[in-house]
Length: 319
Image 1 (cartoon, helix red, strand yellow):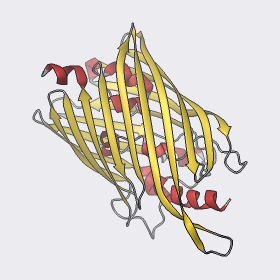
Image 2 (image 1 turned 90 degrees about the horizontal axis):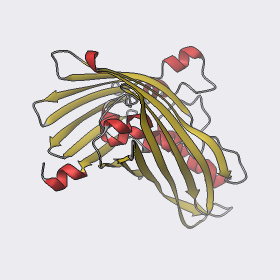
Image 3 (image 1 turned 60 degrees about the horizontal axis):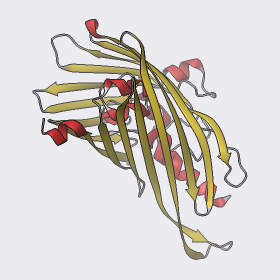
Image 4 (image 1 turned 135 degrees about the vertical axis):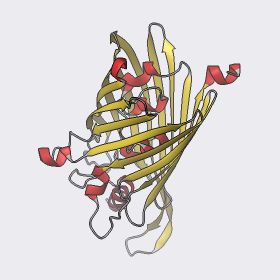
């Protein structure tokens, strides 16, 4: 019980999310599966096309990627918490498949006996694995479904669950707009930690992505975490995310994003002017992208992410 309590305290700082929902061992999914590009847009990624990592927000985006695409992200969270996530997409017959894996290490903790004496150390980690399938069901309209497994281990105790995500994406190319919606992390628990039930951090979100006419700026807006049971309708609406991606020339992108849910979760003592902000940049090469984002959670806490995206066929062909 003491181990679970310690881990949940770390998870609260790590997640940087609204306290209206009870923390569970699976809450690391909320932050661990963000790529640098997604974080740079404040998490407004449910309608973003052309990025393999977007399947983690909406599996219906998979058909918009280049065939045989890979995205890998390393995240340096607060304290000694680190994450890695990889996402892959490929054509599969008349449809598309995707795969993803995420690992988070929560660092090392001091093990004590009943009297508070140090008797060693122990670790805590979270792992998720998922497979996705997506296809087109109408002109410029796509659907996607993900089936996955998640496990959190604290010392010798573990909690696990089966999870699923579903999504829709509709593109309006004439007005340079895409609309997306997804329901993530629905499922049921397989193994309980210390005999306690734990729910998945179910996330319902809708969003729009719009490229301005005559300006190389992509604007993204999402309403996120709409499934928070303990929030009123007004509180859920305040969980919005907003991001802009400005393309400069052919090789540089600048991103600025904002997650109001992160800012709303902070007290006046810990919030700063930049709380909830994500600032990043991306370099574009033939068949290869490199992205970095800094996200501010609170006055003393910031998260660093670096991602590498590879179109494997193009890179190997030297295109």
